[in-house]
Image (tube, rainbow, N blue to C red; front, side, top):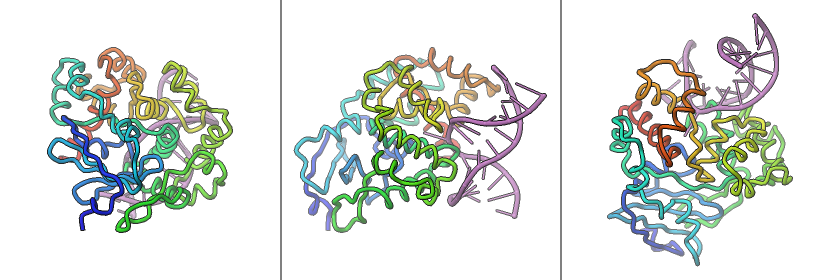
Length: 291
DNA sequence: TACCAGGAGAGCG
DNA sequence: CGCTCTCATGGT
């Protein structure tokens, strides 16, 4: 039986230059799973199934939907891919990356979920991050309505929920030394000491500085939150993959100081530097896997 | 089995 | 400062 028959709401969004698989599976978000021809996951407190076909994304939810803005925002449906990639520097590396990753988009995620999952990402492979997040959600997420033929859906546990847990609870989710960091962040957010909503109105440098006060949040994780949750294009997370890509493509494989790479990134990639970063990341990882 | 993963932070020289 | 070591766990 087609799932469309049991979905409570369904809507088709025409898109162009949108690679849904690359977007949902490029290390920005860690909860999407392949479901038939599409993807199923949770956005906020909603179970969603997404499928791309014939220039449109079809979305199905388990509950009725009055307003789809939450989905349009998450998927950044209003972003113009050609316009964004058109601002990239006119050099061979970026041209190759854009060619290889046509339709790759940045998502706009919930700040708490994004910050928390990237705290958990430290020195972890993507498959392992997904695993940790899955355990955390299964144990402490809120049960969400989902179609009958799907396993029970869970929300990402809110900051107050996580703040009420113990380090032992979190370690049992296989997150190891990241447990006290996640707990500390949850407590800071739950207590109001750190107002994630207010960061949206602050300059990137100030928001970054606020995030980096948290234990377990350095420059890289702060920049991931700034880019993937707040859409800050002047955030340019440099991880091992981006570092490899920059060294190989722009520095003749030489060893380059991290701070120097950040300077280069800030001046070279233009007004959508954050977007460019995601292209370099995905492009470099694709080549590694021989895909 | 051994190695290493989308870091951060403490400790050292 | 700038470098090295450690942290926890599981995939490959």
